[in-house]
Length: 155
Image (cartoon, rainbow, N blue to C red; front, side):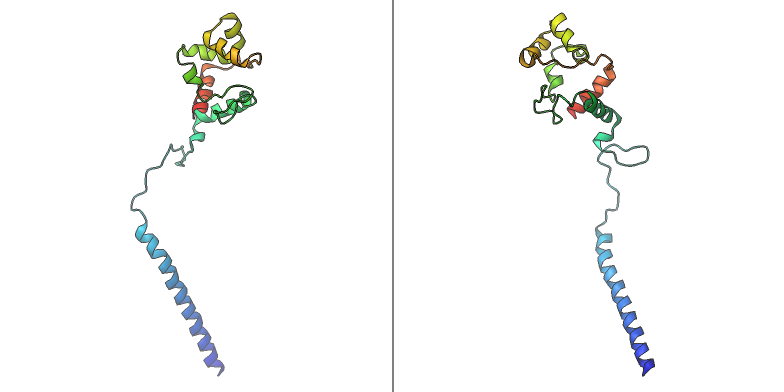
């Protein structure tokens, strides 16, 4: 009797193993059938390790974000569409497009000089709307860094 019970238990275990294997195959076979034969092209830039990078991982935008957080975020809204202490920045390049790009660089570096010394038309327009609040001066920012900021703002 004991031998019969042991055989029944073994048969039951084998049946469960067979069912588990069959059930696993039922789950895997559809995946194999619908799995793409080719790997689709990545939807963005790839880093040196072959990993897909987000748009914020690109060095220029990452540097721009760092500069924005350190220099601009206390006065300009991070969504770039809404005014805060300072104006929304989303269309800053469009708003300065009628002037040489150097004028925008000069504005970022020293807005008060653009207003009071150079009497720049765009600077005076901003002063009329936002004065007497003064934009901080950033004399140490290089053109490349301002371009990084602008890329982040446009991104």
